[in-house]
Length: 330
Image (tube, rainbow, N blue to C red; front, top):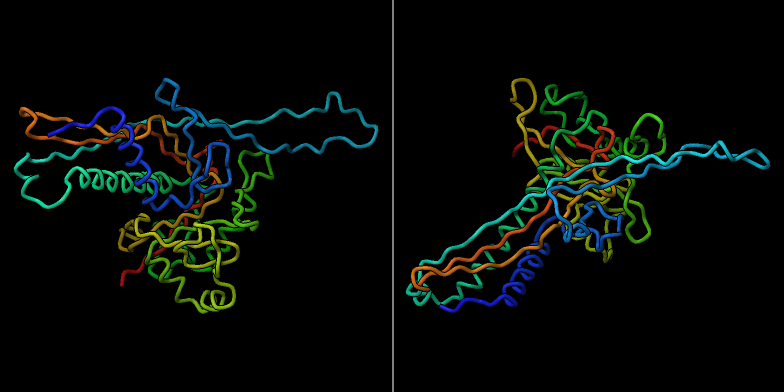
């Protein structure tokens, strides 16, 4: 059994990454380059040549001073720049496929090497998706958590406290009026710009989207102003638009046992603005092949070193609001 050389290993590794990125649900929400901040998920590889187990991202908040007018003295009235910093921890994620041997490969009419690559690409895409959802959903800060219906906490959720267009609009208002810190009154959760329009994005569990689609207000809005002819990939598969919020259904949105005694099936929708999640790539996937038993058998592996986390500054989630509701099962 022939092994593959270093150049081909690198090519396979890149192909694995491209396949994984293309297949992940969050691909449509990624920025196109390191200095592009107009995306829900900000991915950077600026740290791939640096040593260390962590990297830092910084947020510069808007100026809050009024400045001076006319001939007033400016010197002595300058304003200090205010930054909040956050560290992301790098981790290695690896997996491998092992073939039984030459006889097994001879018996089947498929290219098992290609199948190994496909299987590992699929694993990597699902791994990234799970990491993104887990980080998005983890421990929302108190100022970034809303609840369905009349509920005021996860424990108080009942089966009638479902997802609604009212809650989507409430989340939008909260995003527009959000602050980070006590002195910065204009640090709203920034929407992304899509074809010149400012929009937020909300990711819903299928049981939550079912409640939305049952509303007459939603049905009418989609008849009158649904997505028609938009070419940006972010619109692909979207449920529709409500109050300047683009809604997407995603089956991996987290479910929880909420309500009194955990008796109510719940789900945590994710209302997102720009840079709601950060991904730092330190090492793109490699493709390795190992032969053993006198070259009679082979195993293939891929791995990536990266960090995935939800930006949090001054103890507040930067650009995501958790929408906790009942998720009534059919």
